[in-house]
Image 1 (cartoon, rainbow, N blue to C red):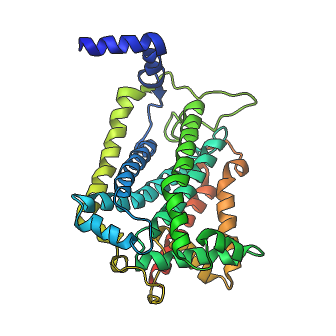
Image 2 (cartoon, one colour):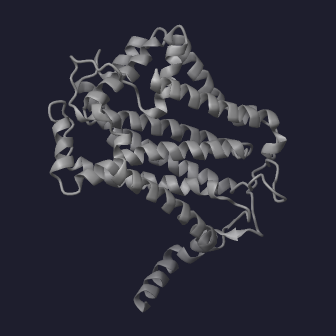
Image 3 (cartoon, one colour):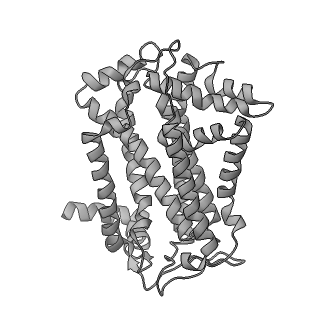
Amino acid sequence: MALLRWIVDWVDVRLGVRAAWESNFTGYRLPRNVNAWYALGAVLLSLFALQFLTGILLLVYYVPDTERAFASVERIMNEVPFGWLIRYLHVVGSNLIVVVLLLHMLSVLFMGSYKRPRELTWLSGFILFNLALFLCLTGYLLPWSQLSFWATTVATDAAGAVPLVGEKLVTLLRGAPSVGAPTLGRFFALHVMGLPLVLMGLIGFHLFCVRRAGVSTPPFGEDARPAQGGPVFTHEDHPDGIPFFPNYTAKEMAVVMFFLALLAGVTFFAPQIFIPADALDPADPFSTPEHIKPEWYFLWAYQTLKIFPSKLLGLAAQGALMTFLALLPFLDRGVERRPAHRPLFTTAFFLGIFLIVAISIWGHYS
């Protein structure tokens, strides 16, 4: 202990770590009525860290070549010690990240935490959500299975409906007119280097926005506050709140442990949920499966393209929805955040969730 205290004293003299710890942890206050939904950010950080670690371990044995990719995945699963565990954690973890991202964004919408002065916080989080989906898409192809090959073909083919530049956009994504070796090379580079670098930068900016603006008070009970924001910058303080460490950190870790337990449960007992039978066969460009569909988080978009009479209209509808969500803080300028006092928004919120879920289920069974 004496040695540790000496090291801390030595570093503190040079960097002031005790003051930084006090400012950002023990002395940093959060609203007294902060709830479990606020812990989803920590859950995402934990899951992203796990993805980063398992991804590095998989890279040791994975071969990004169309002739050897599937065999290298089989080797990881069957020959590498605990390779099956690392791969299952990576696959299940990527799907759980999408689930937690959706829950996080829905909670922010429901509690009106996207409102002024947190427009940049929402916008950076929304971009992170879409970047994570694209990261999942690029990783989906890497096993070079029958399912991943044809699902990627379907997903990239949708870009061809864009007017004027559709064909060029498809070629840009695939690196060739059809999914093949250039596609695998591009998706591999994006998945292991390009997108993670952008992701880490965006996560850093998002956390900076959260810390700089301050944590918003939950819009429930007597402590509920309207959205704040004026002509000059103000940090939302909570002098009568609870310390971030250890009070809130303990609650946060409980939520993190719950989702890690969920990850472990699915990994050990039901990984087939995310690895169906078609994912166990090597890719065959000359044999088209009868029922190939994208992953569950793209089903609503897949079905939307089938609902409209043309892919262009389907893409336009999706683009309009995503643009509306991205710009929502700039469109909704009201200061009221309590859900019970926003009946129109709350009704649209639940109807929107029901519609997306219904379309996704329709896409699954169609």
